[in-house]
Length: 234
Image (tube, rainbow, N blue to C red):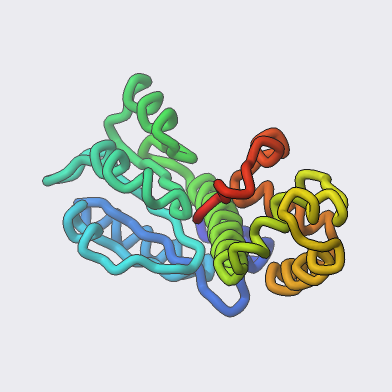
C-alpha cells in the first residue's frame, strides 16, 4: 500500500501549481474518512471529509479543481440522491462513488448520472488515486472553460448595440461594404466599429472573433438568420 502511494506521489504531475486541488469525502464510517484523508493528503491534495450529505451541502463552494469521493449508503440523504441534487450545478466537481454494497443497477444509475467512477470496497489505493487524478484533471478543464466563457461574455457585454450589430454581420461573412448597406452606415464607419469590436473582444484575429461567436452559442447557421434588430443577448 505504501509503495503504491509513493509511486503515485512521485509520478503525479501538478494540475494547478498555485491552487491545491480539493478532494471532498462523504462517508459515515470514521475509519474510512481518516484513511482517505491521509491518502489524499499524502498525494498532495487538500482533503475535506464529512460524515453525511447535509454536512457536505453546508460547506462553501470552492473554485479550485475538486472532486467528490462519495459513499452510496449514508445516514440522511444517500449518495445517489446527493448526486442527483448537486450534479446539474457542479459539473466542475466530478463524483467518484465508493460502496461496500454495490450492484449493477446501482452502478449503472450512478454512471448515467455522470459519475466518473464506481468502486466497490475494498479497492486498491492506486486505483482510487488514479480515479481522483482523472477527476481533478476534468475539473481543471471545466473551471478553465467556465472562466474563458465568463471573460468572453464580459467582453461581449462591453460592446455597444451598434458594435454588436457589426460583429454579427461580419462573422456571418459580410464584407464591410455589405454590412454598411445592411445597417445604413458608411463602410468607413463599419471599419471603425469593427476595430472597436476586435479590441473590446480581445480578439487577436478575425478567426478568433468567429470562434468567440460560436462559443457564445451561435452557430454559423443561426448567425446567418440573425436580424440586426434581434441581437443575441447574454
